[in-house]
Length: 220
Image (cartoon, rainbow, N blue to C red; front, side, top):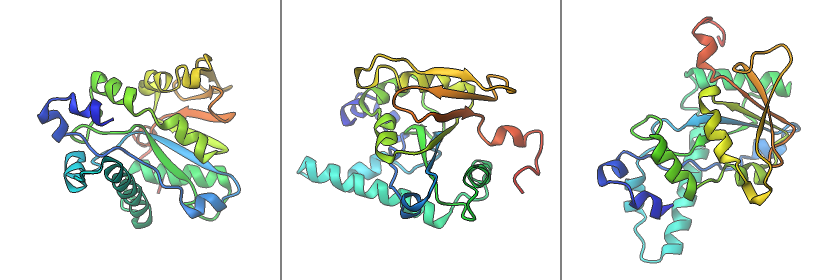
């Protein structure tokens, strides 16, 4: 990953966020129905340049471990503080989780990102995405480790190609990801994703902001 980032121009590196790393929260471990949501990309997940400078150890293994611990702490702190509860993404995700889990809690799920970085709080260019994914394609391993019962991609159809690339020839299994249309829905609205590295109940639907355009009161 460091090699991929170092191949970018200096001004590009300075605009790149930290990579997104999940920390498996106790509430998720205890949940009867484990749900993992996958968003599009981060939105200002602090500067990776500053993080690298902060943990500028001579020993590369110590540096790597320190950065991983810090990024996982960031995730846990973000979830505990509920800093983005006001956003459409989080309001929609919590409402969707409650409908799936039938749980009184709205916080016993995990969430991750399809694109692990943002570029100046926006989606990176395709070339940067491809470069970073080649070195840091962790989502399939993340799903394997977390073993969710349900995975929901809140990415919309514009990220389908990135999903396909993420699961192409993972572990040399050779089977490509397949999108299956769900009865009663248009393909863009809801599709089931079939792949050996995904649970049966894996779906791709719109980012929660999409239905809010037509119904502003939907998640109140």
